[in-house]
Structures are given as structure tokens and as C-alpha cells.
Amino acid sequence: MRKTKLQTLIWIATACIALFLLTGAYIAYRSMEGEIANQFNKQQEMLAKQAASGIEAHFQEILFTLKLGTSLENEGIGANSINLKTLYDQLNGKVISLVRVDESGIPKQAYPEEILEQVKNRNYHGVDYFRVCWITGQPYISKWLTDKTRPRKIIVAVPVFNREVRDGLPAFKGILLADVDPNIIIDTYIKPIKSGKSGFAWLIDSNGTLLYHPFHPDSKDSADRSYSENEDSCSECHQSFDLETRMVTGEAGHTRLKTHTDQEYLIAYSPVHIDGAMWAAIGVNVPYSDVTNSVRRSFICIFILVIMTVAIIIIGAAAIIRLNNKRIKAEEVLASERLVTIGKMAAQVAHEIRNPLSSISLNAELLEDEINSYEGVSTEEAKSLLTAIMSEVDRLASITEDYLKFARLPRPVWEKENINHILLDLLNFSKEEIAKHGIQVITQFDPSIPEIKVDEKQLREAFLNILKNAFEAMPQGGELQVTTTGTGEQIEVIISDTGIGIEEKNLEKIFTPFFTTKEDGTGLGLALTQQIIHEHGGTIQCKSQVGKGTTFVIRFPIVGQRVKVDK
Image 1 (tube, one colour):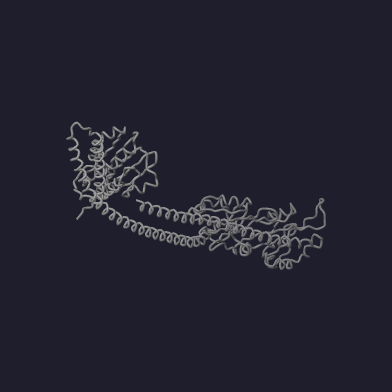
Image 2: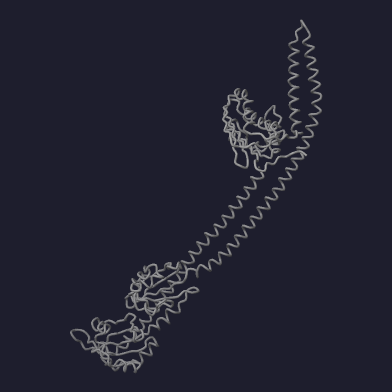
């Protein structure tokens, strides 16, 4: 029992440590994964903000250069004095053309020069950016303009004034117009953004129109319309358009989204403001798996390390159990050898004592007859002494009989018996003693338990030893409960009392031969009981609490019953 309990404790402790390590590793992995994903998304947000700042600076430089060019006419020098080539070269490829339009909307000057040939018959007077510059006197930057017959472009227009005052305001002399190729913006600021292994950047304008997306499934048709107009075709990927809604309102931040295909993305976004107005928004996203794969590889290494640690712990536990089993086995062998030695000594002592006791008993009986033959003489004192002698002789004879039983347990006689009948018969046999101690007996016998092969005489003696201990533990009365149950594989007998109990330090010794806490005890009763139970292939356990009582649990096998038979 002690061996099994220790092994169980070792394995439970090992399992708890292993579970703690594995759980800790998994929690650390999940925490690390989430934190790294969050930090990675913050870096994506920085990339989006840097790209947005680059686009803003790009257009600010164009505006600054165009305003610088118009300042010549603001000084009244004249339209033809603007050197468009100089401005074009100064912008260093940031625009594809420059056009000077007069106050009537007629193009008067252009660079490259062939552009003037293309637009000379065009009147800009009714165009929205011409009218904005004329009415507000402020520069104008268009949205991403798309013409199905021409390449996409972005228009930047700056009003031109001179010193002449009309109605208290400088005279409007037209606009200086620049065409910007969107591909320059995309190639310079959007395409170079690489996030993780397969991340990319994309661009929408303030109306939600998709301006650029490297992997859009239908970019030619949908890129000219806002996400609300594309809702039906985009719903295959998008669960909602909350992100795009936040982007077009000028928000910056980062989030984590899942598509209808259950693929997760880390997405960061930032607005592009030009002259204080919302112009576009940049999004940067990467598959969540790109980020977590690196964490997962680290976790696999940690997990392997944890598994190795657990394996070492298990091997160590197995080694401890093996060493403990060897120690317990050695102790059991030593205890068995001691018991054999003690048994031999007890048998020899009992044999040597029994013959003289028999002689003393016989002579005492003869002496009693002799004393009884005296008439007219007071023999009461002699009879009292003789009775005491015979009582002690009987006690010694009983002790020597117990010693001989323990040393030479008779060969069992196996017969099929019902455990319930044996226990009930014993309780009936002990009625007088039960009544003498004022004990209340409660029985719960399982009528379905089968008969098993037992030596009835020996088993009665084993049960009787337990019952006697219960009676002695309840001198002022108490409750004795005897229960039997059958589980299909074994029969369980539970005998409980509400007596004085056994101290914890003595629990492991109660089955040790010659151990007793009684003044007149031999210490062989429970040792003999255990020996008989083991001969029947069963087990016996004892639980006790001081002041609350003691419980003995005896189990006998039913299926494949094994009994020890002397050969």
C-alpha cells in the first residue's frame, strides 16, 4: 500500500510538473505571438505614415515650385516670361507636363512643347479646377482623374495674378497647370513598401475609390469606383467595409481583420493630407501567418526544449520509482526473513513452553482433586491460589497457540462460501459481547455477491480479530457498521467503528507481528488477519482518526480468483 501510494504521488507530481511546463510554454507562446503581432502592426503603421509624408512632401514641392513660377507674373512681368522648361527641370520628373492657361481658359504656353499642340484647341474655362482657382484664388489638387481614352493623371493648378487691381482684388490672369502621373506616386511611395514575407501597400482616395492594389482580383473595373459601389464584387473577400470607412474619414491606426476565406491580416493605415485637406489613404497589410510563423518556429524550439525537460523529469521519476521499488523489495525481503526467523523462534518457544504447561495443568487438576478430598479443613485459600495458577496456565496456553498459528498457518481447505453468511454468523456469535458494550450494529449486505473459494475457519478468525478490536475500541458503546459490495471483479468488505481510533504514527505498524498498544495483547491478531487475507489473494487496508473511529477495507477477487495453495 505504501509502495503504491508513493508511486502514485511521484507520477502525479511528474504529471503536474509536465502539465505546468507545457501550459506555461503555450501561454508564453500565445502571449508572445500577440505582442509580436501588435508590435509588427505598429511598424506597418509607421511605414504607412512615412509613405503618406512622402506623398504630401511630393505635392508640396510641386505646389511650391509652381507658386514660385507664378510669382514672376505676380510682379507684372507677363505670361510669356514664365520659363516652363526651367520649372519642369526643377521638378525633376515629378510632373509629366506644364501648361499656362490665360484668364479666358485658352492654353498659351506648354512644356514639353508638343503638349501645346495637343491642347491648343481646348478651352479650360468650364473645367472645375480652373473655376476653383478663379473663384477662390487658391491652388487646386484634383482627385485621381480617370479618362477611359487617356492615361490616369492628377491635376495641380495654381492661380496667376498680376499687380492690376480689379474690384479691389488682384487681377486674375489664368492658371499654371501641371499634370502628375499617378504611376510616379505609386512607384515612388507605394510599391517599395514590403511588409514581412508577402505584405504590400495599397491606396484609396477620400471617396473610397481604389487607386492601387497589387493583387485586386478585378482592378481594371473596380479601381475607378468606391468600395460602396463595389460592395457586391468585393464581399467575397471583405466581411465588412468598416476599415475603409475609417480610412476615408482621415483616421490612422492599425487593426487585425479576417476575410471570408478565414485568412487573417494585420493592417495599418494612414491618411494623406494635402494643403490641409484629406486627399487619400494608404493601407499596409500582411498575412497574420507571416508574422506568426517566425514566432511558431521559436515556439517549436521552446516546445522541444520543454518536451526534453519533461522527458528528463519522467525518466528521473521512473528511476526514483525503480530505486524505491528495489529498496521496498529489499525491505520486504528483509522483513520476510525476519518473520521467518521470528516464526521459527516463536514455534520453538511455544513448543518448549506448551509441554511444561500441559504438565502444570495436569498436576494442578490432580492437586485440585486432592484438596477437595480434605474434610473438616479450610481449603479456600489453597483453592483460590490453584484457580489463579490454572487461569494463568490457560492464558499462556492461548498465547502459545497464537504463536503456533502465526508460525505454522494450517493449510487452507478451499470451499465455496458466501461472505455475507460468514459475517452474519460472526455477528450472531458475538451478540452477547455486542450487548455488553452497548454497541449498535448496522449491516448493509449486497445480496448479489457470488460465492467464492475460501477457508471458512481461517476467514472467520480474520474477521473475528477485526471485530474484537472494534469491540475493545468502544468500551462505552458506539456504532459498528459492516458493509459488503460486489463490483463484478471483486468483493469489498468494510468494517467501521466509532471507537477511540489509532494514532497516525501507529497505522503503518498495526500489521507488524508482535506490535501492540494493549497491556495484555500479543500483537499477532492483525498480523495473522493480514496473512490469512493474503492467502486468499485479497488485500486489507486500514484508515483511522483518533477520536472518530477506524475503518478496515478488505477486498477479495472474483474474476480469475487466485489463492495461495501449499504444494
